[in-house]
Amino acid sequence: MPALKINYSYLFLAADEFEDQQIFRRGPYKRAVFALHRASRGEYRQQMNIHFGCTPLQENRMPAKKVINASVSPKGSLETLSQREVQQLSAAGSGSTYTLFRQCALAILNTGAHVDNAKTILEAYHDFEVHIHQQDRGVRLELLNAPADAFVDGQMIASTREMLFSALRDIVYTESEIDSQRIDLSSSEGITDYVFHLLRNARTLRPAVEPKMVVCWGGHSISTEEYKYTKKVGHELGLRSLDICTGCGPGVMKGPMKGATIAHAKQRILEGRYLGLTEPGIIAAEAPNPIVNELVILPDIEKRLEAFVRVGHGIIIFPGGAGTAEEFLYLLGILMHPANKGLPFPVILTGPKSAEAYLQQLNAFVGATLGEAAQQHYQIIIDDPSEVARQMTRGLQEVEQFRRERHDAFHFNWLLRIEESFQRPFDPTHENMASLQLSRDLPPHELAANLRRAFSGIVAGNVKDQGIRRIEQYGPYEIHGDAEVMQPLDRLLQAFVSQHRMKLPGGADYVPCYRVVS
Image (tube, rainbow, N blue to C red; front, side):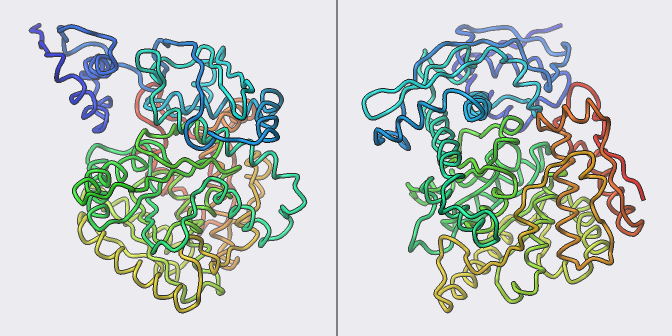
């Protein structure tokens, strides 16, 4: 078989483009692309011959790991600390707080890995350790058996270091504040106030800045065409000086940010914001992409979702799977609450022409379960990135006018009413999943809340460490409800599976972690 000789000077660009376009999915080329990817990281220093037609690389299995020991000091979030804060951080080196930080740190150090199974990553690096040492008015992290891809010539990549200490900042603050007397988690208002303090501590809230934060939701497992489309939309948003907020992982969470970075460069915008909001249960399966320049780790999925709608001024929803459906239903349930009637919040569903059937199916599911009133809270735009950006810009102008008239803050949406049922953490045990009330007899916003919980459980069973272990031990979840809700739900979930939207392709076939029972 003829060989393809590749000049090393082109390797980095080639590997980056291959990674972006997710050509790892294309069987015969996987080994060649992996070689390019490794070469771009400096593992090969010479010209090499790559033969096509080799055995495909299994993406959802960790490749042979290379590790490194290193000592890292903070730059940014934790440069200056009081002695008391240093003591708090040093105390985080043991117990549940340490375990939580270790898991998040490992996820951040694995940025770029094509694995969406938290259990797989944790088991692959079972000997990874992180020790926190006290220094004069600061801390130093000692990393043992850390993923080598996070380093260049022994030095940690700058973006990785920033995110690592952002994780430490958020986790320690959360743990120290949860027992504070000023934190009231017994009421809806208290929970919202807690989310505000978490975002303020992370320096995410920027007062007196006009509304321009666009949240982008969508799947981590998407096609090449869909990924390219998200970059085009991000580019159009960036040309209009808008900032991007996502769940900070790969796929749709990376594409809009990448498109916006190019547009911001064209517009000479030096302070473009690429905000990533995540939570400990999901970060290991969806490690932050390197474009994120502000990372915030919220305590749970409910706080994360509230942060999205409080800090974002409009939302664009791209094709995705169970996680995207969870976010969409959460948003619709809030917007359908009578107290939020008339409150402007632009929401756009969009994708390339090839995704039109998916978007229409999602729209039909909303109509069949929540009714036509729910469909009035968003618009669908097919294959037109410029129109998406124009419509979003108009919507943000309405948001700005509305908040000015009511003297509401631009940086945090205080006027948005969120019921306590949307804020309380949902633990997707088999018992809780089976007892969800899924009936058209419920008020639409309450049904949306319960459907959101159902999808949250499916996400946990698909990618979260604890959820995966529960499925292994007790079998798939059972989701019960009325036939008029269960039938459209089952059709939607089957479509997600057939379109490979539940998990990254590669490895074993997807086995559903649920059963729909009507």
